[in-house]
Length: 427
Ligand code: PMP
Image (cartoon, rainbow, N blue to C red):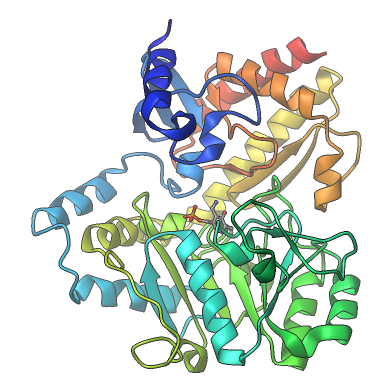
């Protein structure tokens, strides 16, 4: 038995399913998860000391690779002065100033400890600010696991939402309307009927939780227009896209400014951090300046701020995003060439350091239905063949892949060599 198998057995005795977050359990691809012991740049080492090129990057934060010396040093130096005080520290202001400088929509920003907390707080704030209950989200987008956001569409697009999980009250889910991603016409129609009751639209401006789906031309603009017309708050959930698809996130890349933005992942450099911010008049509506309650014992934790600031300093270096984009293009282009030589139909999406691979004959995949039409069995076989050859992809066909600045020629070449063998085993 491998060390990972042994550790997984032990874990299952005391942790539900042996994991602290469900997607880690390999349910999407079958088999048992690997246990990791260390990371270095683009590489991960498992408990059996096997080495893998990593395209998960801790689900996004590791944009500069694992254990970047600047980040490790910042954490060590800050930790030496105390792990947290639950009182204001200067480093929180430095983080807030940087975020307001980098992300176009931010005038005020509040730190929290996860992406889930950021989106949950932004939704409460939007509801409090507008004095409305309804929110609009999109099928295939994930915004964390708070009650209002674990909701899928009812039987018709304009029907009441239904919970995607037991434990979410139907009474709450009915306030969430779920529409089709990239369907601007449907959004306009929905708003012409109930727009004046909608507190907020929340959207992943590039969807990364149904594989990787970029926004269709004009889609984000339509969201902006209907929110303006009906006094609803536009929330971009940039937990994944923030600092990744451009220094200022998707809002900078696509030139559409939301009212509120949620951040996570990269902003904490690998430690538990999230943030939400935006228009001053809306943000002043939260406690202590306003009536909407929101708080956190660990919010703005100095060690976490240090990891985030050190990571954001790397992200701001000239050419950082061009480098990510070029690496991701090299990877995706190389994979497509090898798939085509092996006679395997493979379609891809790529936005900066985010990419998606789809086993489908379709020329493009641009919504949740398209993702669902892909060959899942083929993905599973590909996944395990890649793992066998030392490449660690997200263990689900519904997750985007991430390239870091540490993915050098060796990492990419190792991946392409692995893929050549993996594709050959599929055909
Ligand atoms: N929003 C988006 C777009 C996400 O991708 C995620 C996590 N993958 C979340 C929110 C929730 O973040 P967390 O897991 O930190 O709670």
